[in-house]
Image (cartoon, rainbow over all chains, first blue to last red; front, top):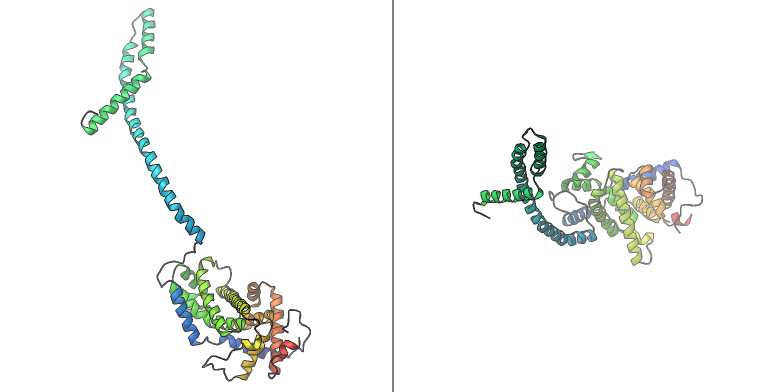
Length: 166
Length: 189
């Protein structure tokens, strides 16, 4: 019944007639919508859209994304708590290491004069050899000495901080 | 379109930032012509009104996706055409058929053209056109879109739009020549 895109030939209307039709159609496009239609449109928009000043338009998240985000909240809380628990001992270790570092330096500096005394020239080759042995054994503090010095420095630091023996 | 509130594009940018007044200004600018389009595409007053409301609601929801690649009016007409055809499809699923006579409803009260026989004949002839010719004529002459814009909206070449507009007008002219036989436009083919 209706014409498809491949309609057969039809009487070609005069150009003036086509122009008249065009103007009639253009006239339809310039008509105002009925007042009741525009009023109902405004009511629908007022009911459905945020009030003026409600903020920027945000892209609506899909329901699955919203659910995923809500589900991630407790997981994130557990992970954060675990991190805090794991962080605490390492902080103590860091403090301990920081306290040990100057103590080790102190131990090294106290050991240095001893080494300096040990390398005083004595004039004989045999004594020189003994001095070298002394230097080798005393100039470089052992690991135990450094550790003991560090512990001692740590205790001293704690004594200063707390005011009483640990 | 530019007026007190700036261009359509400026209004969209403001609306994207949450300026509801800017969106309302867009509504006021385009609602009349969009209603004219939805009325002729749906051929049903209630559906046309629903399509108009859906057009602006969908436009608001889609503000974040509007990137300015096409004109605001083209964007709005695309939404309106889709909303209109959705409503037509829904109505067709409810009813067995929708012929031109049933679709032509009485003019709204207070319509200045109510007594205009020529206009009624035009409306009837327009409703009797096939979808391809009617949408081309509606978008070109009633909505005022250029051939390129209408082509972009309909997804066909601009030459096809021009051809359909010409043939659509010719069919309408033929129908208006014999207003006592409005079905002629659909039977001569």
